[in-house]
Image (cartoon, rainbow, N blue to C red; front, side):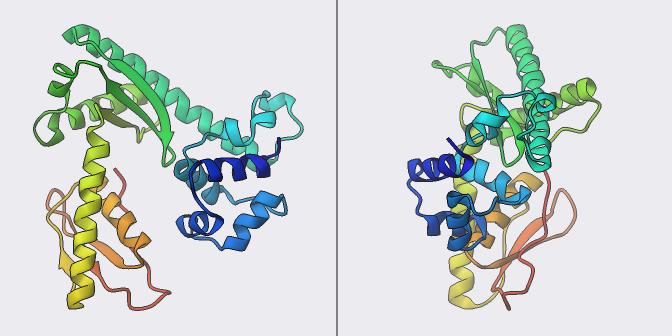
Length: 253
């Protein structure tokens, strides 16, 4: 089965039309049609968005090629080879992080499982448990403990790889709930800007929170920008003056 066929299959399983996917990727509907008909292939940045939006991995979309060792496969394009190498590196980071967190769970005698994945081109690990009584202690007040766990785990990964990690650590779906709350906050600000025409300042947020707000604002066709210095850095939401105007200041967690 070709990349084009698998892409169409993944899109349909996600309940998205070609137009839906095009809007989320920032490309035209005809571009999606070309991808699914094998006429053209998505660029690197679009591919990464596809993996996140459709919740699929390279091994699914490029199953026939990616199952082979890169050095032995002549069917891989340079782009596919680079993508596989990058994805393998992210998975390696997730494996290191999972081992580190399992060790911490053993030390505190907490029961929990580790789930791994790659989201938004970042390795992610999540601690989950059927009985979340103990696990909740790893979240802490306003997520302070899970934030500390993330920093410690990133350092552990960096010690192993020698490279700075942007790994995301979650506990019991805390970040998923946090993303939804921030999504709602962003939409409320957008509604206010549309009603009044005036910019809206949000409360200070960390870089992870600001990035989520920026993404929502961009998807809604508005403009946002970060102002101030840490830890009081905040996001302002504006009406977008023109199509050419830049949508945001990127923040990196």
